Length: 322
Image (cartoon, rainbow, N blue to C red):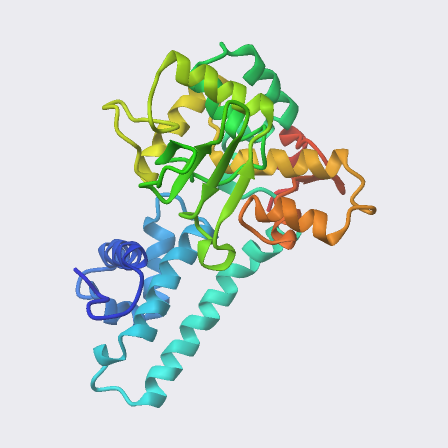
């Protein structure tokens, strides 16, 4: 069911919120299975989440509560018998639930601690040096080596290489994300389809010679017009790219590893190996821009263990978790 019909929300947000609301309704007891019942009976609704969520974390509950708040904001017409004051009272109740649920998430971010879900994945143990070492062990020209190179030889983006076109000179791109070759020794990458594009507009990179060599070796082995292709020889969607990279990285690295771990490993290594006290705000902003986030978020990506930036020791860390 579409709960956001005739609203101005982004279609991706609508799809996500509809999915979360329908999921929650399925958890509700008989005779309470409607979005209105979720809103009117928050205690019953939250108890249903605690009982039925397969992965009962604050982060998962955040997405569900956000969907309810968004419905209340964008669909006031769904409450025709309520006064404005009554709607505001219910909204305040859900805002309080949202604040209470998100408090541990915010505290974890302030302390630069991994999420519970991240802690369950072995890839969190891999340092930036581990990733570089594994990359260099792989055959030059292989897709596996190229993928890791794209996330270790330049500041790593998110899952934004899903449909990255490769074009030459002044050729007009068909895709929002593309790599332009300018002569034999220059490549520039332009990313305009990414999570924070509304704020940061585009991410640009002039590739270093070593990354150009990696791309050239891969294209020589498998000529194509896109950086990465799916099994059918077509560009990935963002979703299929996330699934594909997850499978590939698990096979190569021998542990569950997601693209966000590249960002954590890169930032942790960068802060650990550079004198941040002498780095100017402009220099830090330049690197942060290439990752599509603020300097504050750049610092938030670092892992901290026993008060210092560096590799996590999960055997010791687990004892500190709530």
